[in-house]
Image (cartoon, rainbow, N blue to C red; front, side, top):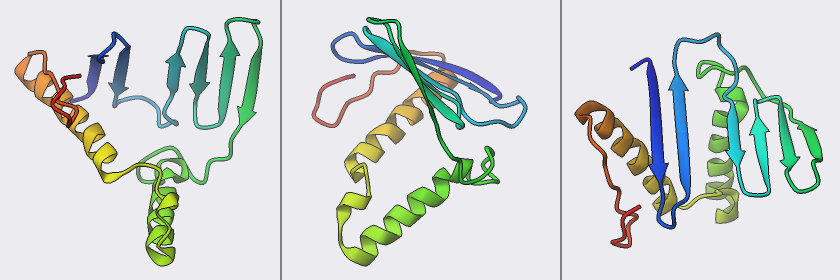
Length: 134
């Protein structure tokens, strides 16, 4: 697919949307998170935090380890994941890995459900592993 929009509603009424567009100039991913009191935006070069309460904002510059494309390692993110895994195995300290296997599987199940919804043209509910639907 070359373009996809996924709308999510979590238990408790929290909503999210995800838009993927394949055929754009190669650049870093853009992320925007909006909450009640502020928002966070990131573009692979900087993170901007907006405070809706006081109207302030802060820009945090970040260094990318590589180019934006998958071929370039997703800005160093791919190498960071491998390095953290190898360090955890080498030292026996699981704190180097920031998500559990269960959490990683849950995120993959969500993406697989989105793909199933796209192909079938239906709304898909996902079990969160505890028997509850999200």
